[in-house]
Amino acid sequence: MVSSIKLTQAFVDYLKQKNLQDKVFLLIADDGGGKYSLQGGACTIGSVFNLVMLDELDAAYPIPLNNDAGVKLYSSTYNLYFLEEGLVLDVKDYRILLRDNAHQFENDLQIVNGAEILAAFKKGIVAKNVGC
Image 1 (cartoon, rainbow, N blue to C red):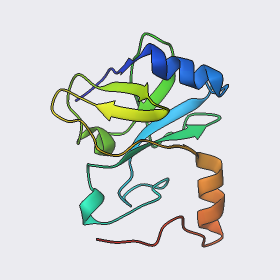
Image 2: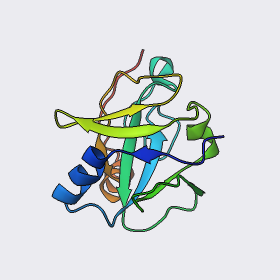
Image 3: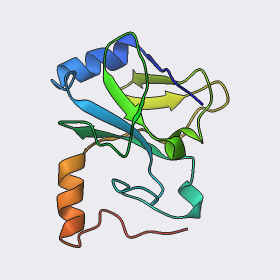
Image 4: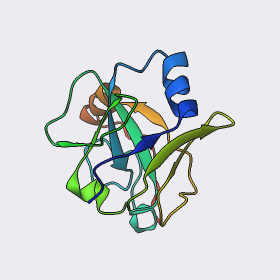
């Protein structure tokens, strides 16, 4: 299982520009399977990822993704199942990109606010009502 991630300088600079470097982040597969998932359906399983921004760690995502930049980044066994060694987060042309030794994921990652997602879900609001 993946235990570390390379954060490029472009990604670290992006976080600093947005004043997000001290937040806690979750790397999630955005496929409808997790409590912060905005999308869902068979076509997104293991292929669409996002970064969830939190003020403190969510115990459901206990696995740290070690990085040289000191960014607090975590995930879960389920989310890491889809990823291989050589995990990298990068920014190019203001797009957050994820890749590993086996994949160059096609979607741009979003940074989403975990508290806002949970509050919206509690009210019955969903971001996308799409399927495959």
